[in-house]
Length: 372
Image (cartoon, rainbow, N blue to C red):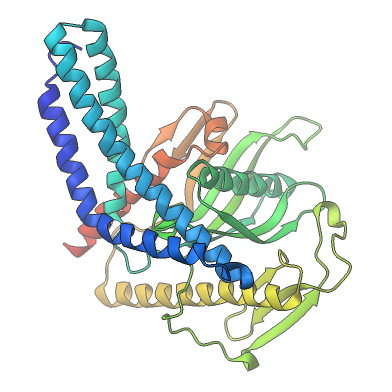
């Protein structure tokens, strides 16, 4: 495009990347990658499979983040060289290619810059996502399963490992609920803006009269705890139920009572896990989820108390935060940020970065407004 000031644009990208490098502490990331690499190379790594999975998953996620950062910086350097050569040779086609690459880079760097807005106490943690079907019957159960697929596809596209703890299948179609972890740095801070009630409007494939149906599903996101977190659970406060793992349609996929359900009696929080073969492993995984939810509950109560004391009436995350409309038009719109796209299928296939980035910026703006 004629008139583009490539030199200024490239310098702006380089300045932004420098800021990102400082905020992400890339040097610390390199040190952690080196340390994890040594641990992965240890011959006894897989003697403890749970720890090995955690270590290799963390290494994979960190390496992916590092590759993303270094890849962008390398592309900016390549762009500067491309522009210099094209201008020297008066190559209009090469300048057109540079214009296209500049636009792509600006979008990619802006997306990475969003990471610098994640400065909350637990934002750097991995995430546990819970999805539950709400009002809407079988359509809601089908929608809940679609949302689970959407987030797992999003994770796969970013090469983030996903660990499914529990899926409760509905009788006719879809799921009643699902619980899974996304093992990646900043997964909690990133996905926490997805928490809330999601609403689907479509012609129901389960209605023989072809009527339009509105259904709902709830998404909950909590951070994975670390050993330094002080969350104590009294065994006397737990009810432990064991049962056989089940698959779609209620078909048994296990011949032993290995699945575990934990009920925290003081709060009524219930978690289940059936992804492991042994009862002990499932109980340990369920306890990880339970502690994460207890921490989230405690933090939510603290935040509510602070809000009451302050009398703050600033904007908060409402229950219904996003609409997915398939009929009479095609649109996905976030009700908090106003961000919208006209291709619901792409969103359901995992293309939710635009919504996440807009949500993070919106939340940061709301926090600043509340501080003022």
